Length: 63
Image (cartoon, rainbow, N blue to C red; front, side):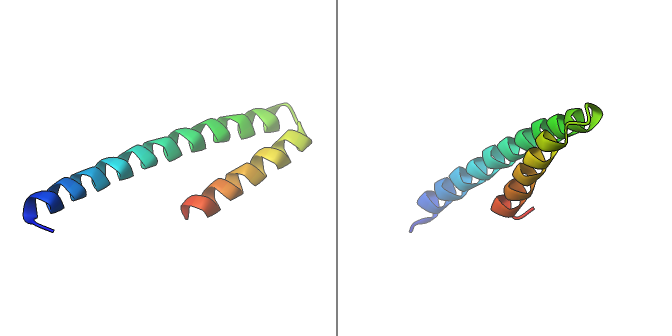
């Protein structure tokens, strides 16, 4: 791979990483807000469901 192609590849990779990180941050923020609402309303069933989603999201993205 020549330098120009390598630079383009690295830029594309960086852009992709930034997009995925932004999506993950947004999803975690939304999920955290919904978990807090479930706690505030004492909705145990919803809390457990959302907590499991949180665990899966963290497992999937290694966070």
